[in-house]
Length: 142
Image 1 (cartoon, rainbow, N blue to C red):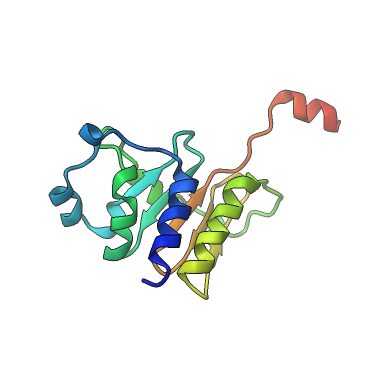
Image 2 (cartoon, rainbow, N blue to C red):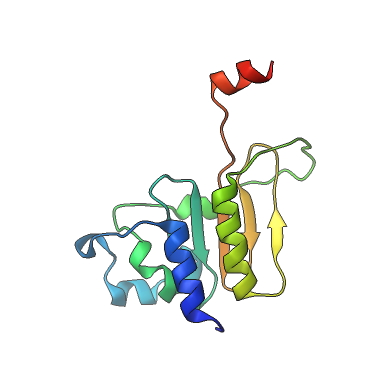
């Protein structure tokens, strides 16, 4: 993988979560996993990163907590017929775009109203939760 150091630093900024060593999955067990079962989620549960390749697993290992179970993340149903606007947090989206820029020339984006956006590169799949407006934001817009 080209630009390994840059990608590692960018994922570190995106996830911004350092799992204590005693809560990490043992390296041997982690390496034996299927790549797409390696999912790292940030502390606020806004973004999830899935390893698509063996190489990608090495970038995510330190962010995976053995006490978390995110297997269901990769089975999000997308309804391609639903139209509408959904907002996503720009601070996360810009970091994902930066990683994608160093990881691949082609990016696949899947989205549906009120669902996480799915951004797929050669080595990773990123899921970014939509912004949730609270009642005060809706009152201001009305």
